[in-house]
Image 1 (tube, helix red, strand yellow):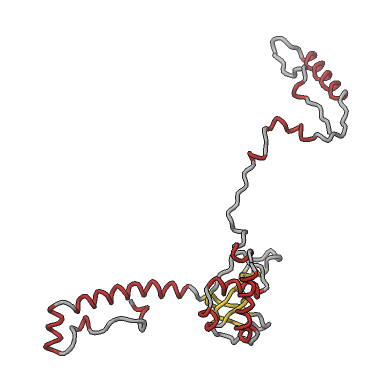
Image 2 (cartoon, one colour):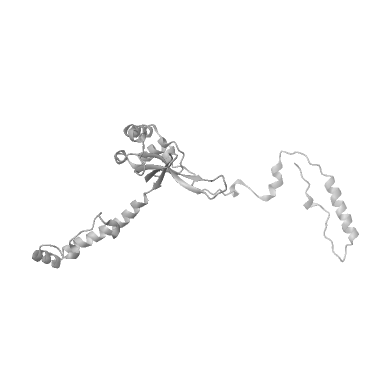
Amino acid sequence: MTYPNIFNCDYSLTSSPSTDSPSSSTENLEHVLEGMDSYELTDSDDEDSLFAGENSSESDIIVIDDGSMEIDPMLTEISQDVSDEIDEIHHMDYQHLYSEKQNGKYYIGLCAEILQNDYLHLPTESIYLMVNSISPSTYYKWPHNSCLRYLYYYGMTAMHKPEIHILQLHIMDDGTYSVVIKTFWLKIIQRKWKKIFKLRKEMLSNRLQLSSMHHREIHGNWPISLRVLPGLVGLLCY
């Protein structure tokens, strides 16, 4: 389409109170309208020329990509060896895969977040559904990435960033396998164990002091503060 350029007309609509009269402004306006009537709207293949003055180019376009929609190449680039490895894991763990899961039990696997009431304009609630699980014995026999590939491809669910979690299964009334993620307990235990390990090193170092060894020679045991080394039992109390 070819449009009239009313901004480059030779007729000026700007009038000065001291030089132009109202009648001259009206005449200028009529000339502009007549000039617009002389243009014809025709189809043109070069419609982009209308925006040539915008200085827009492909190099000026900025695409923001935070990587949130990208799938891990480890899951997309599958070779024949990787495919055979996945099938071997499935052959080893097929009994667990097709077995009935028990309510309240803990499993190692993948889960997906599902939004409820998303189409009713109501407050949305999300639940996590079990996608796939693997037996602990099989998980410890294979590398973590191999188990992740197996869970992803045999889970039959598209996921952008799948992660293996410790899941507690809660079977709903309609038979839906909803889960609660319990992996955060590992972080708590690891954080607590660092404190315990540091405390054990200090206690062992204090047992090597002459006063502690002299106490043991006389009384047959270590001082009260050095008798019991902290361990996994009562870990969360520290």
